[in-house]
Amino acid sequence: MTILSLFRVIPLLCMLPLAAQAQAPAQGLVKVTPLGGQQGEFCRFDRAMIFEDPNGTRILYDAGRTVAGAEDPRLGKIDVVLVSHMHGDHLGDRHNPAPNAGSCDKPDISASALPNSNSVNIAVKTGAKIVTGSEMPSFFAAKLKQAGGDEKNSVLVRFGAMQTINGVGITTVPAAHSNGIAGDFVGQRLGDMLKETGITAYAGPATGYVVKFSNGLTVYLSGDTGITGEQKEVVGEYYKPQLAVMNIGDTFTTGPREAAYVVNELVEPKAVIASHANEVATQNGKVIAGTKTEQFMKASKVPVYVPLSDKTMSFDGKGRCTAGC
Image 1 (tube, rainbow, N blue to C red):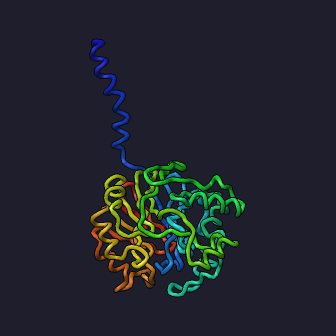
Image 2: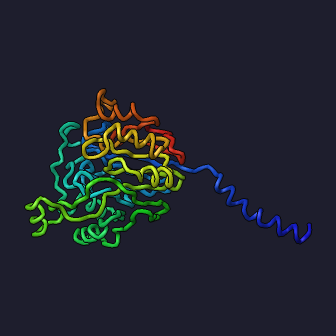
Image 3: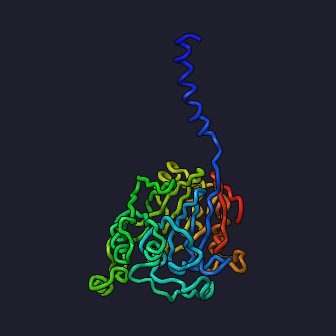
């Protein structure tokens, strides 16, 4: 072989491992476990989900009111806490005193988490990082410090950026929703003044999330949002998620038909998990006829999975459910 031939072959040999790596199938499964109000059901306040990467990294999304505080035995190890926005049903102003407290239609959320929040208490207990965008990180840093945690565990990631924690990529994406901090979370004189005047403290715009797992699965977490152009151009066309978690509750967020439009025409994932239905959606684990959840399932062109509390679903890198759905 001539020297000239070697110069032609060597670059091709160097490229082979990269090409093989790009074509290699994704390995491992992402596990998704809803932490709702009643085991085996999809209930009114259900928002919380744990995502577990194949490498063991565990992410809690919108703890809200159904995670029974930092001592909830279902939590286990938590590495990251995500909070889409500052409303009490997502941040966690109060919560179940124990798993399955109350009933699906009348949940017991009598345990107060004020002024810290359920999310902050969980992060302090587990040592997890709270990853948020907008103006929320400075608020969480102060809360973590006040609660005895490490303020450095409040991590910023704004639109268009990406934080990688334990091999999992996390970014925020726009959500069309309000995002004020209620006076009860602020406390003391300023908190009282906010409540007296009926206003909230500034926290910047609400967000959703895009999470990239190590097996190749990309997930869109809508948070509370209406229909936005960014769902097409940013989420659908740039991030290209295979799986979406879509809020469908109406009034406060997209309704079932609007959410189906987002899934079918804008984001176009391979599958979707319904969330934030604001209703008793199931009985004995079966979707109730006439519910918003059923409407969403019928209107969606892709498989819709119902987040039954404590029932783990597993997804491969292409968004296919392999178990629990």
